Image 1 (spheres, helix red, strand yellow):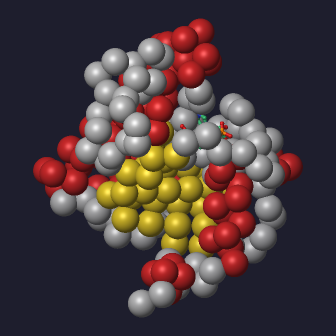
Image 2 (cartoon, rainbow, N blue to C red):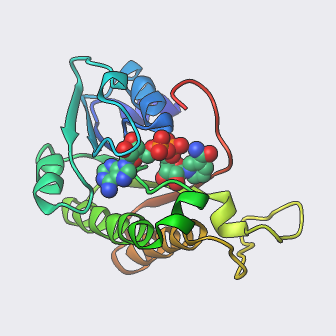
Length: 189
Ligand SMILES: NC(=O)c1ccc[n+]([C@@H]2O[C@H](COP(=O)([O-])OP(=O)(O)OC[C@H]3O[C@@H](n4cnc5c(N)ncnc54)[C@H](O)[C@@H]3O)[C@@H](O)[C@H]2O)c1
């Protein structure tokens, strides 16, 4: 099966879908034979005008920690969830460590809980290379390398996200993908 066929007729939820990576993902998903794309984003670091106003796209302005907004987002029964919403990134987390913990920690826990209840086909988490490998890992990194020497709350909570996704997989068999992004740049940044 070609990769794009996995999206045929699927409803996809993208948290943080108005952000730099999210907007590009949403544009790509729209090109595929997806049925519907739901964006849940509180616009804390993005702009409404950046979100494409295409027929398949539903934008919900709201926080991933808010149950009402989450119920609304999951009402369309998404098959696939991309969890991109995050308090981003290192320096911001040093300045606002409590917000970082609440958004990146409690936030992913809630989205995972709803994804589990919905029995989604796949949960894809935008993890972070810097949160898993740290700054002092040997090169080249290997997938099983994990650093216990982290320098920012963001690194800690991005790793926490992977611990939570793994936990939902281990206990509930939730199909998860931990995608470890490094520094991205491009349109929408
Ligand atoms: N950009 C990179 O280089 C990079 C590297 C590693 C990992 N990541 C991860 O990829 C994801 C996307 O990164 P990005 O570069 O697009 O960042 P971004 O800041 O552009 O996008 C994050 C989006 O999440 C939204 N958001 C923040 N808090 C929210 C909340 N409480 N509820 C709902 N929405 C909320 C923001 O408004 C924004 O639209 C993040 O999870 C980030 O940690 C990015």
